Length: 441
Ligand code: S3P
Image 1 (spheres, rainbow, N blue to C red):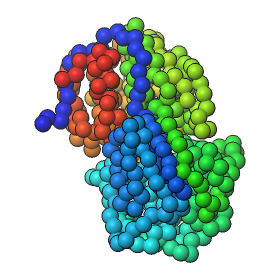
Image 2: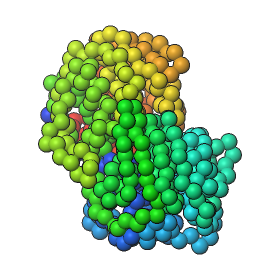
Image 3: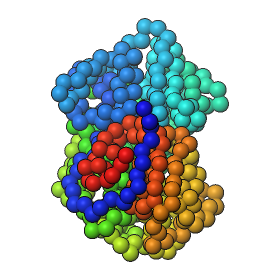
Image 4: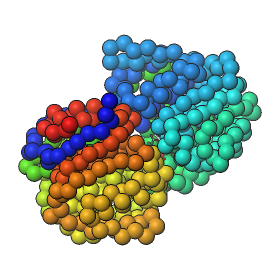
C-alpha cells in the first residue's frame, strides 16, 4: 500500500469544534506510574498511538498486566519496583524518546539485565543525558557511545543523588524522579524549567515530593521508597497536536476553530504566548484544574497582518515541539522573526532545526542561520504554486504534520511521504483534517 498523500488544494473557510488526540507525555507517564502503584489504576482517554502502545508493551514485558474495558485501560501494579522479570529481556521503545528515557529510571533496581532498543531514529539519539545521572545513583549501565542498545542492571545499593539538570529536558528530569522513587533517602534536583507532568502526577498521588520555584529553575526534593495506591486518570487533549490546527486556522481565511479539553499547563503553552505576541488572538475558555493540570478549550480565529517576533529563549522549553509550526507562522508574518538557542530541536526524532531551515528555504523563505539561532524573513504575501515532494525526514511525525498544514494554507501541489509517521503521536490527524474540509488523497 502506498505510504504517501497528495494535497493539491488549499482548505476552504471553516468553522468547527474539534477534539484532538490525548496528550502523549501524560499518557506515557500514567502508564509508567500505574506500573509502580499498589493495586489497580484506571486510565481513560489514553492516547492510542505507537509511542503509548509501546509503553504498554514495555510494562507487560516487565511483568505488569493490563486490559482494556471500553474506553479505559486497567493496569495492575505491585508497588515500587514491582516488575517481575524472570530472565534477561529486551524492551523496545520504538520511536519514543520519552518512553526510553523514563523506563531507564524505573529499572534502577532491576534484578535481571534489561536491554533497551528502539527504531532507527531513536537509535541515533544521545542517552548520555540520562546515563550520567543514573550512574550516580549506582546503576550499572552499558552502551556504546551513549547510544542504543543500552543494557541496564539494577542495584540493591542505590544512593540518593544531588544533580543539576541544566538542559531543560523533562525526559531527563522525569527519568531521575522515577529513579529517585526506587532509591532510599532524599534526592535533590536543581532543574531548568521543562514540562512538569511527572511532578504534578506524583503530587496528586500525595507522594512526598517538594517543588520550590526559583527564578529560572525548580528545586525538587523527592523521598524514595514511599508507596502509592492505584489511581484513576482521564487524559486531556495534547497541545502539541492542537498546535497544527491552531496554525491551520490562523493562516486560513475567515475560519474559526474551538479545540476542546486540551491540557494548557503553563509549561506547555509557549506556542500560544508566542503566536499571541505575533498578533493572534488565541483565547482559553472554560478553564479548569484536573489533578493539578490546567485544562481549557482553545478558541482560534483567522488572522491577517501577523507580525514578526523576537522570541525570548525562556519560552523555548514550553514550545519545544511546536517550533516547526511556529516557523511557518513566522514565514507568513511581516518582518524578521528571531529565534535563539534552539539546539535542542536537533536532538529530537529528527534534526528538526536543520530540517526546519531547509523546509523554509524550499518554500522560498530567506533564513539566516548562526549556529542554533535563526532569523526568518517573513513574507505575508507568500503563496505557493509549484510541486513539492517531502521525503527523507526520518519519518518524523511533526515534519509530516508541518508539510500538510503548509500545503493547506499556502497552496502548491504536495506529495508527502511516510504517512505512517502520524501513528507516533496523532493517528487520527488526517481524519480530523478531512472533517474540517481538507482534500487529501
Ligand atoms: C517530552 C519532553 C520533551 C519533548 C518530548 C516529550 C516528555 O523532550 O520534546 O516530545 O514527555 O517528557 P525533552 O525532555 O528531551 O526536551
